[in-house]
Length: 240
Image (cartoon, rainbow, N blue to C red):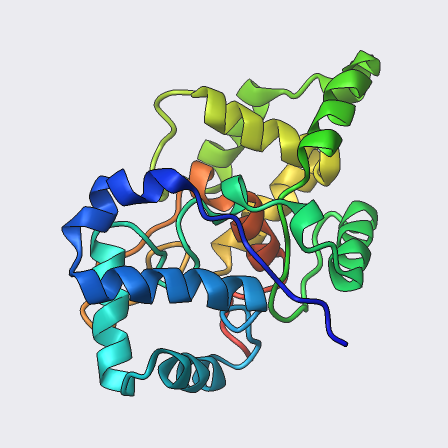
């Protein structure tokens, strides 16, 4: 019997102003999208097949699905690729600890940046793992994340992307997580930024489609754990 998948749904959703901005039926659509994300449909390697599956699951035509994407994107509930905003901050690895995730994370630690990959799967680390990381901070060299150097390298390598004006606690957390897990050398960060530069979508060199707003990535966005893995696996890079 296949393992039943589940997700975390927080009670504050009923008071979330973004949820209250959308129509009642779209609130159900949003919950359904959370389910599709957790089940892996949204991470499908075939974009066309993904759209068809989502339309069937939600009971919508393809044109209605595009309209739904725009409505939910406009209130910043989802990203253009359907990934719910904040997904990797609220769902944890222990909730769906698959062999595929484990193997992928091991592979990430061995390879700082792979050029030719496919699509993505990832999950947020558990609270227990976070505590282990905190306890291991006594390892002096690796635990000291060079925030200033990383930001300077970002500005140098990607001058056309938005400048980072303030280093918030959230941004520090994201940078430090990548420093500890994958990019433990500034040379690796340079390779990562070079890889970002090869994506027309991330660099804002593509025209918006289906009424979406023009998109251009920034340092905070590309270091969100789920987005980083997708960049790592060429999800946002044109297939040659």
